[in-house]
Image 1 (cartoon, rainbow, N blue to C red):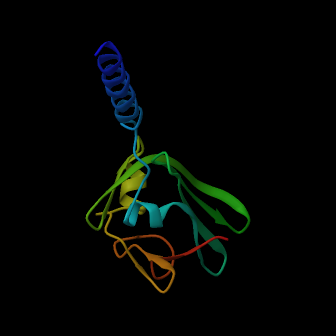
Image 2: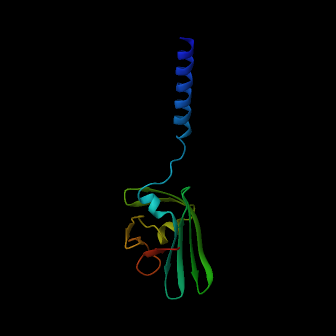
Image 3: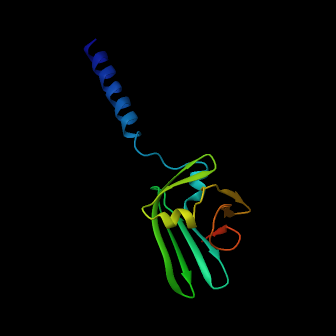
Length: 126
């Protein structure tokens, strides 16, 4: 009987340990997982870049005629079809994510409310 109690206690501790170990920040899934990576929108003389990291941080920058002219870091998450971003610079919101809606089509990321670039579509950088 002592051995059964010990085995039951050991099994309970093991199950609880695995349960609590898996309760950290979950890996992005669904549309969040599709966003992860680097995206570029190339214009005639400029390129617009977005990076979404799996730790929910990101970067946005613009290179115009070979010079860096915009550069923002941000935190991000996804709710439905909206990218929710947090950044200290209000220009970032006005320029990049006016409402944050997005969708994927033909391996491109589309930001319909995106104010920069031409067409608001980004291609994944390989």
